[in-house]
Length: 411
Image 1 (cartoon, rainbow, N blue to C red):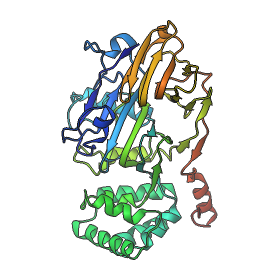
Image 2 (image 1 turned 30 degrees about the vertical axis):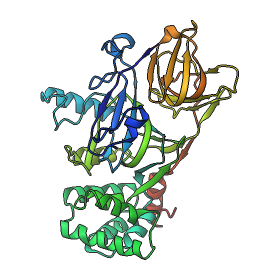
Image 3 (image 1 turned 90 degrees about the vertical axis):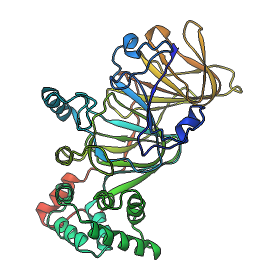
């Protein structure tokens, strides 16, 4: 077992206080958006002597991030395995440096991910059902929304929604047209009218990106709020934009992002639409499965990662066992604990500390009063948690209804 030293990212959407305080540091006024914990070559963790974690652990299939947002992240999707491999090989062949601003594919891996909320965490993720999008648009009587309504009525269902997004990205509304939409949203919210937070979300985004097409697209997306201790799984191909809050992200070890707005980074609208066109991916809350008396295991049935969150208290006499695993990254998310390996070696952890433990450490336990999150690669014995779909698969159902001439599904 050894402590990890991790790289941070100061993206402009990051919180100036949340991560520094979580780590026990004094904020310096600059944004701290992410802390990367793992072996990804763009920002590998090290030991206290500067030796890369990858040198001792090899390439871990999972990556852990602390993420803290004060304003919306880019409107984005993550590619599947095939797209990631093809895109990475093409950019490598073109000689585009890994750190080039125009580079999209940083590695050949797909990027499913899970967000475990450390504070109240708001995100936009996945398309609303057709009928709900039409209802949202119907409340805003502008030329742009009328065109979108006509298009979706003519081609309902998931393919029709993707087509609308493509049209918005290829031919975005003008600044004047976006101003009309913002004004309509403001009028409705002033009157106490909103549809599942669509209008207030558009206004919140417009505070930062008033002339971005993402203001319109945001109204087509579900707004999800996770409370601390809740987790959501985002499969590849799910369009999303995290809005605010702090979470622990666990994902396949990848940094492949296709962006279409709400950012000053390079955009790839063609790639994003192509990724969406592969079909609706899974978006679900992950129901934890118990391990022992004090551990919740969040395992969304992917081969790269699972997350176990364990609590211990001095009032509980026995050490709290952690789920068995080969290679593990551990993050103390609260309190002060001691991590104990099979040889009886002990390592103290307080909130924000991260540790790597390998197969030679054997069974791990914690003692003290606090909470530890363990990211690891699941095995065949790892119990998969129940996934509760936040957006039930509706592509086939809507298409079948369309073929029968009954119009879109009305969920």
